Image (cartoon, rainbow, N blue to C red; front, side):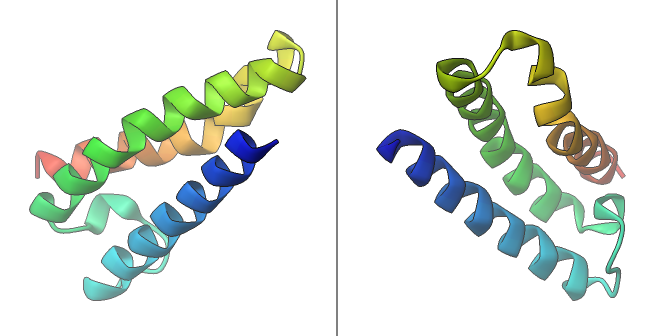
Amino acid sequence: MQRELHHAISLAGFAVDVLRARAAVGSDTDADAVAPSTARRLLRRIEPLLAEQRACWLLRSRPGGLSDSIAELDRLRHQLQLAAHA
């Protein structure tokens, strides 16, 4: 449970940073509008978060719902990849 709580806090902090990055460019919906350097920094942080989400999910849940569990993070990762290479 402590591991999952720590992960939830990490996800929340990451979400705040994504929102700040979007606000800095005047976009409240698309991470692909984020500055390339910021997108690259966020990408370095999202990979470990995805790995930890998978690990935490498998501790308490069935593997069948894992893809749904990470779908939004995966979508965000794709947007950040686009922004990083803009």
